[in-house]
Image (cartoon, rainbow, N blue to C red; front, side, top):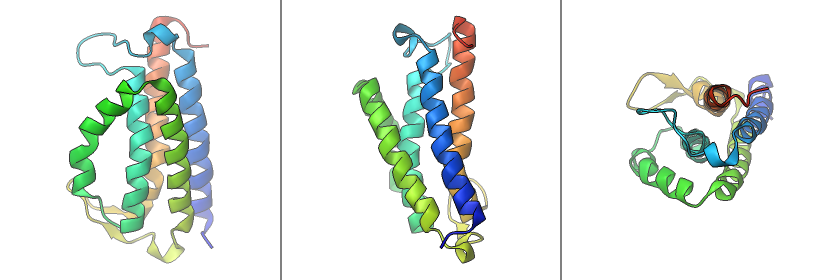
Length: 154
């Protein structure tokens, strides 16, 4: 039975996915693939990132490692997901959010301090079970910023 951390993060992850989708709804349909300039990302691009990374994060939580193959295939997968359209991205977000919530809730308390191998820094399994919540919240703010530029943020 998962402890308080897992239950909190599962609930927060579900709420973050809902808020991410609501943020995308604030962007007019004809502007969801719009960039304000330069290398700025579009709302659909950051939404796609969240949809995909929820799935690969679930894999990492279960494997207790960040798969190099998942990292290598990510750019092409993201481009392909965006090309399939918004409905596909919304379905992918819903499906992968459920998958990652299940992985979070399956994580036993005694595994939370387990180191997870990755190329960037020392991280524990707790960091990984918290990542989907953090990542979607971060990107929800980016999408809301685009909405503020467009004058559609309430």
